[in-house]
Picture (cartoon, rainbow, N blue to C red):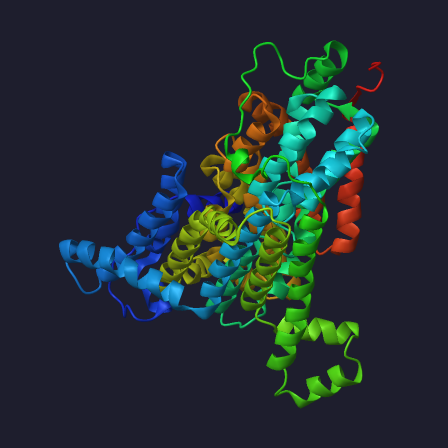
Length: 568
């Protein structure tokens, strides 16, 4: 079994020599037969360069080029293939952008970025944070409030890191909570919650990858519905959120975090004497103007409009899509608000369009509120909205390159090749755990979850489908990709959210990474041992998840040391 696991991991991260090039290049299966192990070149190159350069855009770009170069070798010499391979990258990018679904995903991400900027500029997020901070009267409540605020800023991990830290820092300092613990709470409620939130800047990217991967196995699915189905299998995301609450309520810590918390409680030093705290300059761009009256409604109303509009849009869009199905229409008209009707309409809706429309409507409402309260002029409001969109342009670039890489992988027949040699060798129950671990390694080394998801998702779903076509098994494997990528990104010292969390908490970045890594690895181990392995063996998730949650509580209870006996 170890040998099989090793072979699978090696094939995913290592390039091997392959077979001769000699079959019809227009069919994915023919390319798989023709190129053999060379079909692994694009994902391998992307992974290798991501390790070496720490730059996901460059890595994905060259990964795409390696694939177009191979395909061009069917018709050209080495020099000709180099030229045409480079030129064909543009075709793949344009093809990705021309797809209405993909365009909707990019517009949705950019528009939500603009909405976040408007809410921040109006002081809505700050008002909510300050209202919550007033309830922080002890080390326990201060940590819980920080956690709750992190959950409130569910729509974007960057906004979470830049908003929660500066607001809660004075409160946690007063309660003698170390900056390391504050940074951990911020970081653990950034990507982990944004990755599973029903509406966020992450959703578009995740459902785009899911849809593309399902298309490669010839299945047309509602990607948003599949995304929702993965949530119970996102063990690390769920467990790390519970872990925060458990340590806060019990006031128990272990590992390097215990030393940091004990130092803060005993001496009052929230930072060590040798610490070099990082201060965020980016947060100032999100700050409201001096002297304006802060109101929580400036956050609640626009976000509420976004959420309500999205749910109404899902229903209406799905209803229109099902209008040609008499049986469905009869069921919906008899009980329009039944669970079955909502499930079917939501499942048939075009999530990319609906979320874009909802974000645009929420942005209009936020803009009108800001102008009406004279918080900014219409020109300032639009500039703020555009500035917020600019902050997510890099997401759009990564999306296009990830989709292009997926297209090249499909045409080369990479997934078909892997399926042909692995479907009978990898034990079905181990695949989700292996995928989680592999995604973690790649994401940790590269510092990005987006790039990791883009590399692994096109390979995972076809392989899972070949090993076991059962719906829940494929969904679990897809969830392992998304969760493994987030775990690695969460504890990576070069991750943008890890850096921003250090900035938001004004913590020493190395100390934040060291104290957080011990906790993240513990939760990841539980995710594998008590999550993916038993779930892979067929144990229902409604049994697996409570066992995993109980394991988290037990670890803190038995291994944690109390930090509550120090008088403030």
